[in-house]
Image 1: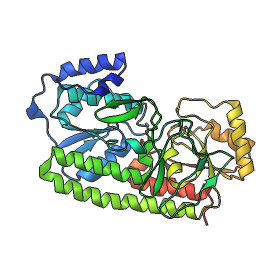
Image 2: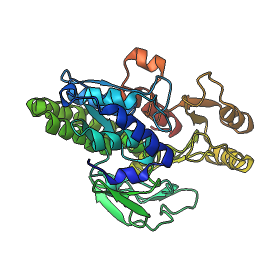
Image 3: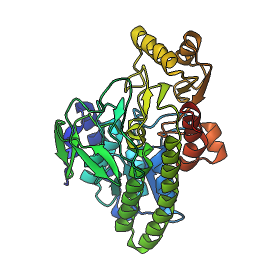
Image 4: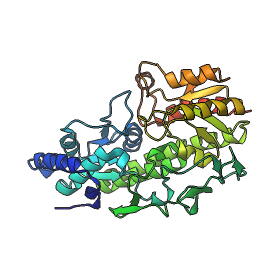
Length: 371
């Protein structure tokens, strides 16, 4: 039996559930596994896996429309469905603990399934939940100048060392308490998983998916590599659009009435998104946090508030309404953290690229007052 250190991260309940599912997998023969079908752990990974695999593999996203991928829990038979399909693309991080449990079970008891961790090789570029972005020593490929906002230094409390990748500065996780599993160092439950929002790091994830599929299915390796190369060109276009947007921005601070999801974008492009909500979607902002946010809106002359359309499917956003009622702001626009999709976007056929271009980039262009 092949065991991984990932298993050590599971809770007692998760381990028991994985053991139960593993027993159900004993009757699945190796001949049942194939690479005609696969699963990806949430919307963006599903979209990228589909783009890379083309017609070779039909991927499914188990997370329902209108639901965010992190914090989601699957039905009891999902592991067996994934084992039948033959390939699983996921992120090895506690924010997707259900996917960690599924991957551990597959690797331990059904090693013919291709298990692909999209975070492989990105350890030194992952940010911690406590990574502060109120000011930036960011250096983009166009040599953005360093700016300080709200009087804060862009330095995390853990004294991270700075490493440069693709012309950008990133804080490494040097002083985080980490555990090693599968050859990777991840801070225990400390990693901000929203890495997919950074289009530069997204190119590396897409290439990792292509490499994993090519290893598992050599006959279609050239297809996967070509599709990934084509798609990363599109991701480079998103990076360029965001770079140019920030170059012409008159405002460097935005206010978001939702949980803290956009640290990677802030770190990459050198702007601030203030939120009175913490890192958890379930966290309720305090009256003091809301008051400070309202003061920031007025002091910065912010006219448009950003909000998360996933947080209330019925369209009621009391925090947005409070900020608009108590501040000088007059409008609100949605942005998406891209861990899920909505029915209207799905009906339009919008994937990652389209959601970035149709929702996030226009919203940032509006709130950052680009020329």
